[in-house]
Length: 79
Image 1: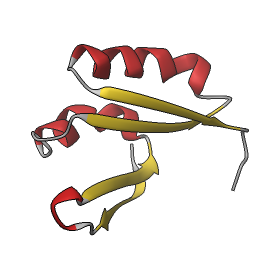
Image 2: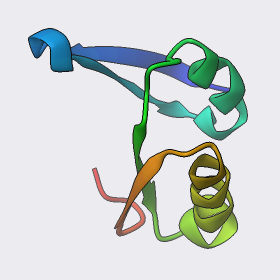
Image 3: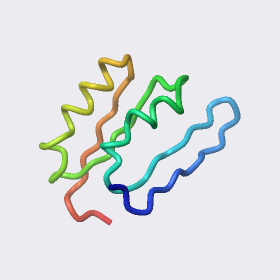
Image 4: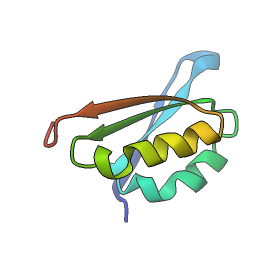
């Protein structure tokens, strides 16, 4: 379940991109990727509670899809 998902568009001309922000996004990667067929790079921002559970699995999945991956881990509870 995604609670109050938001998509923020960063306008940079030909280098524009969207940022998907929400809770439960892990379960919506398939539809998200099909909406972004030109995407080649993903930045995953997670926290110290979620990363041990899903960080490597998601990064490995995206790497298998030929994505360049940057994984950023913040302290749990970080505003």
